[in-house]
Length: 249
Image 1: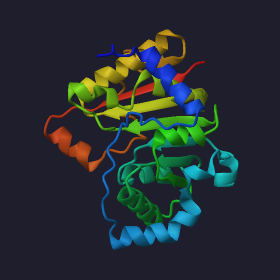
Image 2 (image 1 turned 90 degrees about the vertical axis):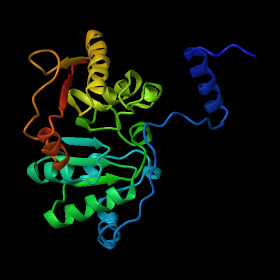
Image 3 (image 1 turned 180 degrees about the horizontal axis):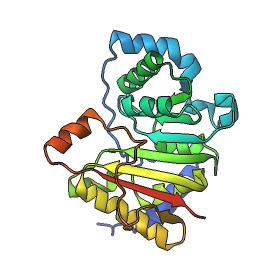
Image 4 (image 1 turned 30 degrees about the vertical axis):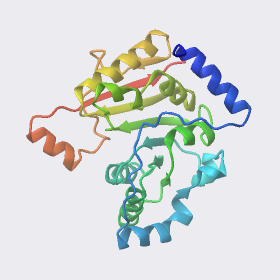
């Protein structure tokens, strides 16, 4: 039986395989749940995708062309059904918003909500956020990135699937301009502790500034809408932890 490979050896093998054009399946931070669109969602997709949809296959985007203006742009990873994202876009018409979600019913629901609220400063991807950030978003182009309630992968053996890891946070930092803010939120205390540990380690390298006055979590910012799910959790005594870190270098 051969000895197990070290992380550095694994990364080297992956890089060599990619250079040779071979595909190696990488760990996913999500499970693709194929749900059926409602008639309303499907109709919204048909009507609004031509103007609000973005395709990963199109490659790098120019934000001024996508939105027809120059404005601060916020990207949300994993917007679920899109209610909070649409509410944020409606409340801040002076900003641009991009949502990334892998589940089609959520994309359809988001577009339907955007139609109903008359929101025009929003664009969406139906694709893996890791690949969108890698292939489509220009470096130092974003004013903010937000990740609200990502899958906590609560079993210890699944923690490697969590989205917020040092390598991915570094990729997000590269896409934020200096002064841009990464906003994270979770209702799993263990994941909150993990997020804080990852971000504090990066902060010690001089890359981030924690916007918490107590150097841990911030109160829920006004711009993040309180969801029905979160309200229910509050009634049941469940906690929610928000983290905000500003890129410093």
